[in-house]
Length: 137
Image (cartoon, rainbow, N blue to C red; front, side, top):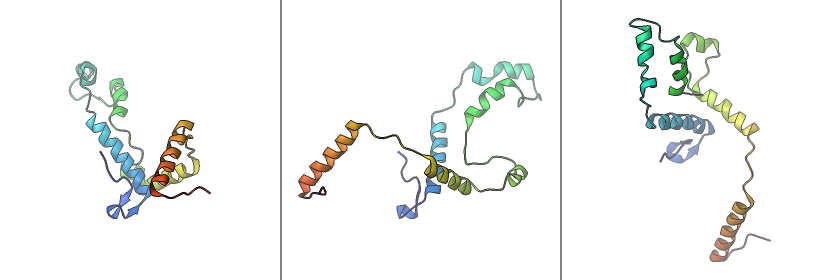
């Protein structure tokens, strides 16, 4: 279980940018603990034999087939410094805040099913009865 995404200062402060960054880290951790598939195709024995020692593996179709499966960061920028600088030299946190703004402006959650809303209402009503309060007018 991962606890505390978005929390700062021992949970006293919550930061949406930090939440988005933490979600990226959690995705990376989950990908890592799933393990790396090892089989005849992923071992790339045939491409290694085909290309040989000192050859160009980066342009081989096998590399293109598997390279994006290893890591898919959205916010971590792995470009070389010059390319990163030409693209605006934004920090991971700045990119996270941009994503937060996009989510806040565009996300429309799916409504809860009627039976879920009814269950929640029944829990609230029962709790109010047990505590001797009523918030309904």
